[in-house]
Amino acid sequence: MAQQAQETIRLVTILDPGYRAWCRSRRERMETGRARDPLAQDYYAELKRWEGVVQQLLAAAISNPVDERILESPTRDRKGKTISIYREIDFVSGRATSPDIFVEIKFREQSMNGKSGWPQLDRSLEIARTRWPGVRGLCVNVALGDVLQTEQECVYPTVMTSELPAAIQDLSLKDGNTVWICGNEVAAFALQHDLFTDDDVRRLPELREVMLNPQVVLQTRNVQSGTTLTGLFDQFRPCNESHRD
Image (cartoon, rainbow, N blue to C red):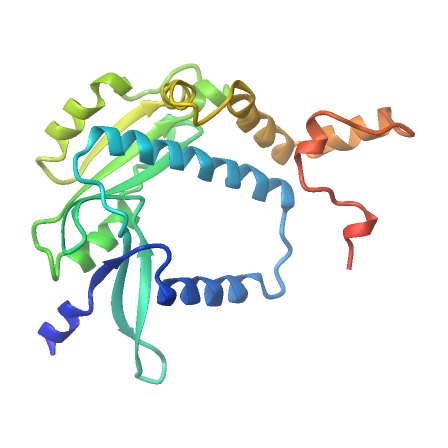
């Protein structure tokens, strides 16, 4: 039975039909009766774009990245039926059938919080190691204080993108390590490889400011009442009468 469970642990792509159906089901359960903040959604959607940049940065620094980074494993539902659950791994290297490293990417507005993202990664490793005992974990924290102006400097030693391949090679030989990268380093990589424009880089702190202080948008609208507002507010999802149920 244990052997059978191990064989059902596998890595799949984000296009896997089972994973997509599972995501839809979870999204529907979470959204039932739950009010959504469109400004927060915009900010976190932009962070997702930054995560994509870090994934490309890691692909340039770590050999053998694989597309299959969704960890599928079996569990039992309340009725005792065996079902599959899925855990997204931010970056995987090696092979889908025998991965070497699982990487967790975390964005930190303030590095002094000291959180590393390891609790989430540890659970994925615990599951994966029942089939691949040798898979290692690495957490990559992006200190966004320099981009968001939330702190003067990262309280942890950071790695330049040019030094990242050597640093990760050294860290990933052991398990349980964390590497820190400054947000401006990620932005520079994105600009260098035409993944972002200057406006894209400026957009992240603007979205955060509006999320935290929505009155800024409302005040701007009031000042310019009677005119067609252009600029910052037009970047966000509108919340006017035409969008109410």
